Image 1 (cartoon, one colour):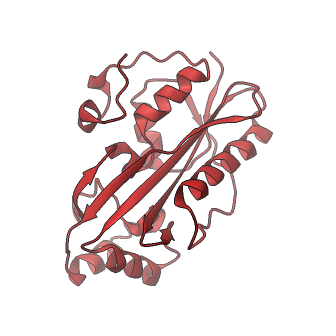
Image 2: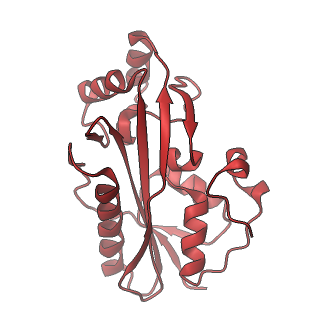
Length: 210
């Protein structure tokens, strides 16, 4: 099997991919990942994921490359990672009590390939009406700063999400089922049981039949 390279420093993506039990090397790429504040969120996420994969290919010419990018979209605005505490506070108050979409694009390049296979699942998320004190506490803990939209659906201390419709892992940062599908298309053999994935994967609308 060719080497699999994850072109991301995200610990959450690393934890998700570890569940596939594939040999994985983490080599983040150094790119400007600032998210445009307006535009089509699906196009933005796909472009950034593909750009990361292409940058990783320059360093690893023979490996299978996995890259991803996540953006949050609400009412015409596109949110990436907050720049600072003030930006995180603005994002969390903007999302409070509202419905938004999370787009996590995953791009995979075959070994020695130059073009990327890309998918961009979309999950609808409804945030609860949390108080300002919880926003401030989350920021004080340093939780928002490496996350699109300044929150994590899996945050047990904050629990900002009221409900969601779609792939749970997509909100965490990488749809496992979409990634498995692309890996198979990239000729990477993957034998996965639902038991080794997250509990939410069993009822995911993207779940593969085999």
